[in-house]
Image: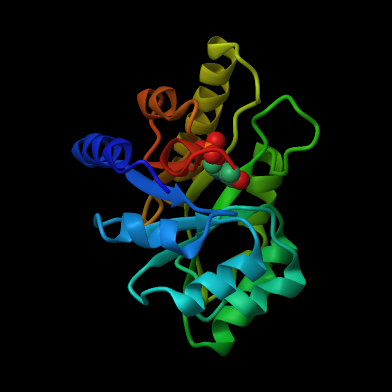
Length: 221
Ligand SMILES: *Cc1c(COP(=O)(O)O)cnc(C)c1O
């Protein structure tokens, strides 16, 4: 079961700092989600489409579900009816599919562009050059059913705090640059999704507006 006291103190602190808490419930049972729901938590993050779809169907309908993991294009159709925010957009082709599926449901789906800020090879995400070319493309500019609300990134899995801090600074600088270059007239572009259980305080210090916290709330996976 989740640690309710830990949840309450983190949730309160983040609320005071105006930072959105995404409770990452992947692999955890529905009862655990309901336990935090009963404390007032409404935003939950999942990284697998099938799990997301099953939990959404079974749990209260005022939960805001965030997709935080790498997404395959052929799975977008399953989450398009209900997803609140997709954190992990890392290609124009994926964005095109989100736009297409959102159109079918007559919705606008909020998205974040995921950046590669870690040193590890395996992490998904765009470079700043790739993001610029995506945002300049006619394909992107003609999309009516997606809205880009900011950026997301994951720091390296290292213990070196200075390295992690540097990676967060990099993401924040990309955010500031792209905001100036492409979104100065778009107030919805305001989220910098960075920070997890081990580094969320550092991320907030570096300008995070949205943290994705799993194991600290729900226990080890
Ligand atoms: C699992 C996951 C998290 C949460 O990780 P914790 O260390 O358990 O807080 C955050 N972001 C993404 C993208 C994840 O996959």
